[in-house]
Image (cartoon, rainbow, N blue to C red):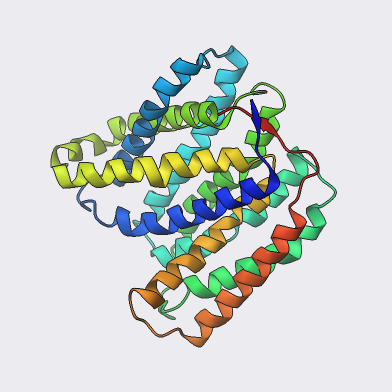
Length: 305
């Protein structure tokens, strides 16, 4: 048993933001002809497979019926989010989905107030609004003014965003009851396993499984990379931080990922920063610093692994 401290949790989430930012370039290397829901299901399944030997070695594979139901619910939330994202992208742009995603930390704060109320909730509202505004400015650059998002796409992805916002607070709530004592390795394994099963079953009904024949060695390489670094590592870091840092503050690190993606474009893409981007970057920085000060918890959570 060991304790994840406040500083260690935030350092882990900084790495999380970097891995998430890098994952977008890696995902673009996989053939677009392959069903994206199938790819995501395979990514989650690979993650679970990697963690299985570690769970067996630690003897942490035992599960109660209530615990299994809790992991099933969390896995379903993951499947709902990824499924809604790919369905929405068929009818609208990544810019519109990215802008809507900036609401997720704020929605997480709302669910957190219901499931795990805390006296510092009010202190995080303004910093999150500032960071969300900055992230929206970074995402919306270059968006066509005549491009109106599809109402269907926004509705579908809105449901997915609600599922993702519910994920962290519910995870923390369950860690205090049916999933008490579960470390980040076990949490990641079971949630990924159930999420993968839901997505792969969906592919079975939708016919998306047929595109598996198009997978090449190049695709498998990037799929393994995404599974290990963009999915497994990020969700392990996420569960490592939940409880030490408030769930809404944990999810707010997505704003930092948005900033890092923009910085990659500035440095490696040799693109001159636009005034809108500079303003957005400054707001993200200010908001995240304020969140850092307001997210400390007095008692760190004890975790395994």
